[in-house]
Amino acid sequence: MIPLSDIDRRPFRFPVVTALIIGANVIMFFLELTNGQPFILRWSLIPSKISAGHDLITILTAMFMHGGWLHIIGNMVYFWAFGPEIEDTMGRIRYPIFYLAGGLVATMAQVMINPLSNVPNLGASGAIAAVMGAFLVTFPKDRIRTVVFIGFFFTITFIPALILVVFWFVLQLLSEIGSIMERSSDGVAHMAHIGGILFGILTARFFEIKKRLQRN
Image 1 (tube, rainbow, N blue to C red):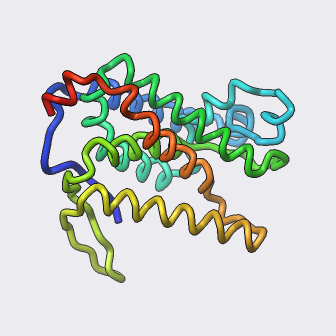
Image 2: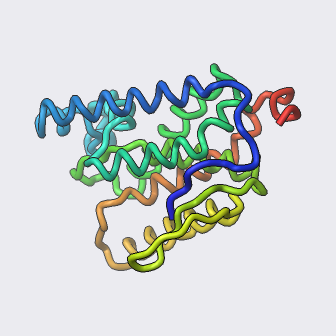
């Protein structure tokens, strides 16, 4: 399933911060394409180094990097589907703080589950998961225009945010449990997704501006 947009509400102002974050991700991705593997290895996050207190700046830089075209396109589509409305409720100062904090918590959750790993971690998924968690507790009944794939075919339908986000979260949880039990990895940082969405669910209300929330 690929979420596209909220059909029950639109932000009152153009989501400048969301657009700027997407722009930062795109710029970083083109830097990866231009500079190749050495650049990716230098600025992506390696859990064992973070555990040892080294290269801490990569906690931030890895948050804006991606492993390929499908990775960045998928993440940015999800972000654009949920980000604008959350930006509208938090405002242009609190929202980026929330986004970065969500990414930080998501990253540390991934490091804690496998602190000795030397596999590079990169991607905005953890921070975006935090935004999805915020959307879940703020607008659970909103219908999300979603592309649903059925074999080789697809259709566009409207799915309540509660169902869509909870379904996504359960998939991440089951995938992480499966990885632990099989002692293997599918290359996806599921624990970062779990940490990010839980952060969003638990803290969103502290970042929201009451007047903006009432207006929505």
